[in-house]
Image 1 (cartoon, rainbow, N blue to C red):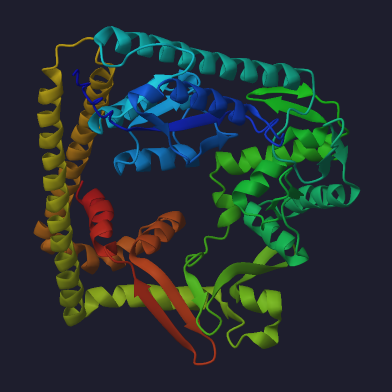
Image 2 (cartoon, helix red, strand yellow; image 1 turned 45 degrees about the horizontal axis):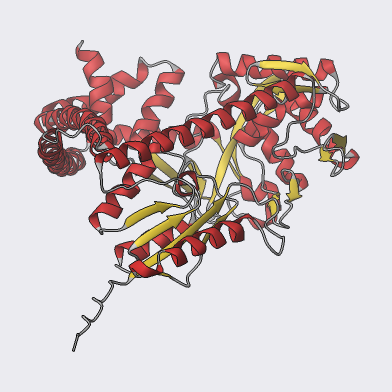
Length: 522
């Protein structure tokens, strides 16, 4: 009687099929590219059923995501399941479906190797268990990355050619124009075009971004709002200096299109007059050349940006009245009173020279009151000592990071296998991180030296504070503004109670000592 040997049990290999498509085009179809990729993966897994391969029911589909990075929801779920030990094999239709980045792919392969997960491409046969198989895999991935970069270059070239022909090449719509859904050309939105023309005129009148923004806010106007193809509403935010500057310098309003530094005639209609445009650009250049100081603080307002209305918790802006073409009276006005009405604010306004003198007198009093002087110096030195402790801790952390990176470098540098791409890329990454860590260490050392200097210079602080009176009298207006901004964090004015509260800036005495006392000694 012949006995048959029972078949040996086959290990169960849990396979996850990953699919990806760069664009969303065609995904709405009943059977799309992702379905085709999964069907091929499932068929391959069935062909390996004798080896124990089984297909996991979970779908890892990334539709409309690029392979140039790892910011993909299905990929993140897949990597999480691999880390949790739920996957034994990853199956893709082609290598570039998983990634088109050599560095990202090497990182994923490192996780695969760590978790003993195999990787299979249905249309590209290779075996990652051998050095030759890994080499073939990396060659294929290099071509995938090359293809992605070529596609990017072609896209950039297409955008450049489109702009040079004066065509709208896509992007966010701008205030004053709508994008025709059929022709994809810019069409004038008359209501918004009137707003744009008014904004250009307002800037010429006020000659500053901030004042223009206030005027725009007073009218309740916002940036361009539009709806995406997915139905999401974007834009409609309040103007700030960045968005207003972009609007005022956008040549699209002259009927032109810009590509990097090039400006070309566009197909769309201009909505701003050439002379108005030129005047605005000239004013912007003049403001930039002087850093805007003659506009932002042309009358040397000492407390501009520092003075607050305590009851309203609102900023108080500097302004002035004009008689015979000259400024004759300066004062600070509560922004809340300006926007909501004078009855809504108990402070309303305050004479500029009066409140500036009160603040300067409070600063002068520090040097004449020994008890107050000692208290401030003690607090400043205490803060400097804490700063030293923080800097020392930061330096120790930087040194520990350097030591850890150097240890890891020594371990990887000992790998003689030239086909181990993951190790080679990791080595390059570690060297870059080590270089940055050394730079961080040097920065921490410089900051620590500066902090230690402030701890040692108690006497210099006292001398600087005592010499405030003589120093102040010899400073130019802009230097006085700079000094006050170093020392003072904010000034609160309560018109109802007639009080002024000065809050000094933490570390301001140290900064003053370093910047002014040091210069005086030199």
